[in-house]
Amino acid sequence: AQSVAQPEDQVNVAEGNPLTVKCTYSVSGNPYLFWYVQYPNRGLQFLLKYITGDNLVKGSYGFEAEFNKSQTSFHLKKPSALVSDSALYFCAVRDDSSYKLIFGSGTRLLVRP
Amino acid sequence: GAVVSQHPSWVICKSGTSVKIECRSLDFQATTMFWYRQFPKQSLMLMATSNEGSKATYEQGVEKDKFLINHASLTLSTLTVTSAHPEDSSFYICSARAGVVLAGSYEQYFGPGTRLTVT
Image (cartoon, rainbow over all chains, first blue to last red; front, top):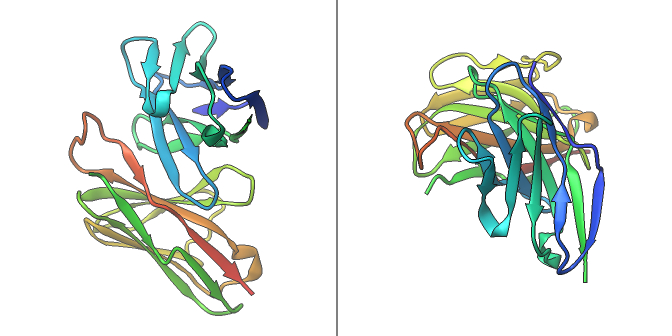
């Protein structure tokens, strides 16, 4: 069965510092991995995805993620955090046959001024 | 492009009544729509998958008679919470998957969510 784990409930970082939000995955076939962001009382916004190709994926709002097959990880990163990046971040894996998305538990990112 | 809307954005209803939530794909045809439920400070839990013109497929533990899903057209799916109770209060989010490749992939596009409060 497909699954993703986000080991951190919350990540705190100062504005201007680099940030990392961790995600590890478990899949039976090729991984199709996604990152979404959710602001309060809003739906999910797509940030980036890994399907195949380069291990470093660049996405929206300056975010990027590194796919690491040996460590089964897909950590979200940004070189310089903004206060406006404070939100709830979800890692997800897509089931290849049904297109269902299986979400991690979410990580709350708090960027302090 | 690829915009999904939900209506209403929030609703308050009395216990025992039914409430309908609409999910529309505004600029593409969605062969598949997904309904999720999210409790406060928790992740999204998939409730059901609906394909246009056929019965929805419910995830284990989701009562199909309580959460009625209708995917009557390629741009509209509805979720009706029947005989609502306070424990049904939650944030309901839909997503839509295009029937053709958009922007290079068969992505899911999410609606803004509907907050249901049952009193």
